Image (tube, rainbow, N blue to C red):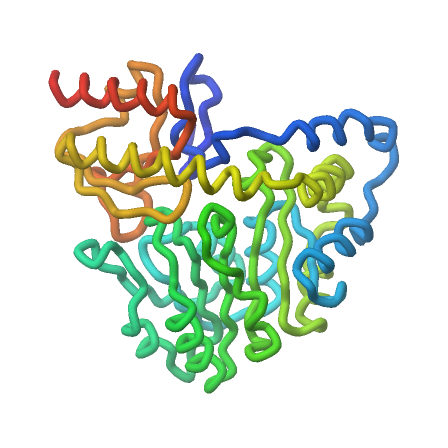
Length: 344
């Protein structure tokens, strides 16, 4: 069977701890679970095709008009809609990054130009990217914090990129799916100044809702939002997904608690990895990218842990791995298992 190239595919592996999928270690809030149970009577009817209640709630949350919000069946659905709607002839993508951008662009036969990030610079996006935004680049895909590196793009640099894109009428697609794990502010406040910006977000990571596919886009232009809505399948976002999204927006204090927990556990993991001789990329997200002197995937799998192999990220090879930040107890067990692998 063909190997699934993303994380989270632990089916058939038995009783394992999944470090390959980067989800909130605090788990799905009880308020969401309760809302899903209470709404079971609604699941026999078709979902609201326009996601009216969730659109209204997201518009209030983002402080934008409702006609700039598009609800999607997760972030990957958003990227497919964006590629289909914008139909760029040539797009710029940083590497390493999430492969879903190129997968979506391949469906529109878009030519992809790669801007390679540098390990010795912690794979940061630098001002060099501005030189790649030429008149024939129709779209730029960015991620902050980037997957798999965990690095953020500063507001100053993002504005420089947006100015360069604005000069040529280039679209900028910004993936903020992991932004809630940082103290950085969303780029939504820049939409009035740079309407060619499309921002993609998701409930998946922050609220540990990977099995409930729901995300959203915030568009600078209402007509672009309409194109994205029209590009989706009818009833693409299920009723449970809409219920869960609404409930997530109404969970008090959860994001702040998450940030504190993830930051503390991430620091412990990074320190432990460095002490074991790993080359660690300092992360701002709920995952860590590192390079190992020894193979890790199979030996850790034998010990009950699944980590993310990163050789299928363009620009990385089989020595690179990514691990999620999980609970304190699980993280201790993983580090002990890694030490056992390295000592063997």
